[in-house]
Length: 327
Image (cartoon, rainbow, N blue to C red; front, top):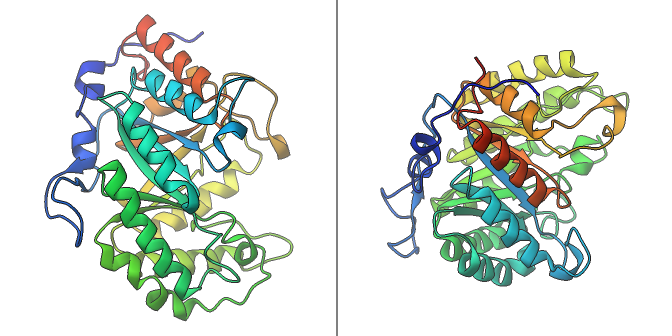
């Protein structure tokens, strides 16, 4: 195992530490209780904050990583482990389960851990991503997420909703974006978008890179309080890494780099993903994070490794408290 020099965990991960940069108390969004905290820009930090992300899209009983453990218990067990190494986590669900998921998580989560909520959008954006009535409904759901979590940040998971757009199989009526996203902008919330981002061209869509750049540009113009989850360096090994560097440069030309958040795919162990891509291990992720200049990085573990990856990060950091920085 590589040797790590120390990271001053108390200065970075203490309760309401880096989260204070994420969740301050300036103006409150319309129609929200004054106790709701409002996100402000993430300032560059010496060491990136780990922001683990769990998707709870299935009924509680179907999300568990092992027999006899409900998805909700599994989520809370992971949050308790993550609270040893960070003070903020993302848990997303589907619009229909917002009430149950966040009421339970906020009741059972560690006191020092902030939860960012969010949801998959495709249930309300059919037949197209430009469904105006769908965005009006989702704006209302976003307000409810914030009321439950107490944090003015909402993650929008759009991978399925944008599937046809990315595949070149749907009309690209980009001119409609500004109008249909107005309900989001009017909430005053900050939205973190898992897609759109600038994507590579494919044999079936030779203009995908330019089209996704234009979509991202228009989304940011319509909803300026936005950040975009990228994932260009998400994999420890990726045969498309060189091409993705070009897409990353174009992404940072499309929206300010300060409005993007990198995402790492991390697993405890296991075989490579499809196409020759390989997950980071927690130790490799710490090495990768030590080279970053950004303030925060999302750690996506999948459901099965949600608890075990958190425990391994905790073990590495206990062995060497400054584990996120190499000598």
